[in-house]
Length: 257
Image 1 (cartoon, rainbow, N blue to C red):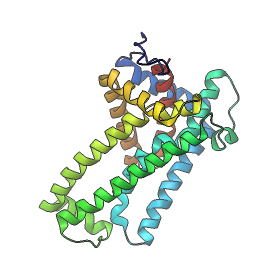
Image 2: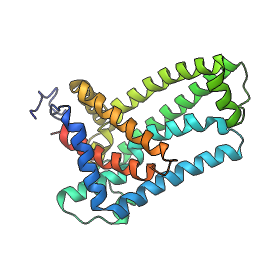
Image 3: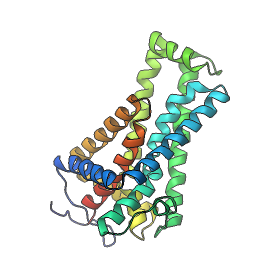
Image 4: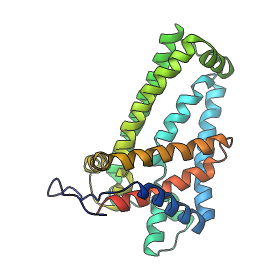
């Protein structure tokens, strides 16, 4: 892989990648997961438990119809939630021991900037939820959210529901692409280097456009792995989440000089 021309005196230099690289990142992610399976799977289990608690609260407060957009939003925030996995992969890379406290009690070179990026992701998440509610009100002409079973029936077996599903998928996909552009390598960079959040985000966006086709493949692979995890009743996310987390670290290391 050859390095691209730097766009500024302080901008990190980016490498060009090929279609083979995203597959290689998955392979390295799987190698990390199997090297420290207990730590990786515990991390994945914590993620799944947190997601289950959120979904349970939706049921308790009788807004279970929001389960789908909330679950999608939590997955979109995955780059920030996987921070401990980046640290684990970094330690494996340099030959340092990896313990549970290393992945759950993190020390970053830019903690304030990571918090700022986290706030940005939360705001995007809230925007997504607001759009989902507006679409529901627009297509079904009502503000009261029905039970999940009723909502799913209406969504898949009525004209309004199918229309909302199509429009929501397009809008949600656009938001997902924006978040992916911003976070593909920015969070690992914030843990690895003393940079500000804006520099990390801009670097991630540059990496996306300078390696557009391979990065789209990488995004598609992430979606496929998460869908496979969800298809296994959600339990598969215990493996899928740490796999993508470890692989994301290797994506960052491969792209940024």
